[in-house]
Length: 215
Image (cartoon, rainbow, N blue to C red; front, side):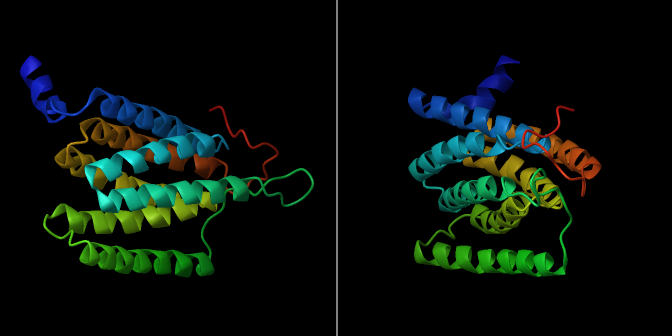
């Protein structure tokens, strides 16, 4: 068992303690934010903002450009989502969970393709194609960009995109040396599955609270 633990965390051998603590803090708030998302609770956003802000700093230190861009985008989508979720459709009801319509499918497709092009250009400019992870980064960035936009718009399909992106990210972050973050994505996979099921029960139901379901 000790050999397995040593092998798993050997990549942290030369990492300063404060960086490890920051990563664990970001993961803690990230998990809380994901859980609030599953509950359809507005607290997803303040907790998510804390997590993404820390990750932007950490990823800048690690030089992981694609991941940094993802988290910077998460931060901006968190601010937008916080605003959108608080909008009301009448005096007592907030915007409910819905499915994508044809227009939103077109927008999501445009975000996906646009992100692929954008990340490709960024990686070309900064010459970041030296490793296979750059190609996977490009794909996961596009997936997560769509997912976060859909989450901010309260579309149930966000969970499908998150599930795919989270699954791909497990081995990706482990390879990059962020072992704790890799474990976080394992948990995110399960939250994505249960989140979809929980949101499906609330689909199109008018909401009178921003604190979601306790189930």
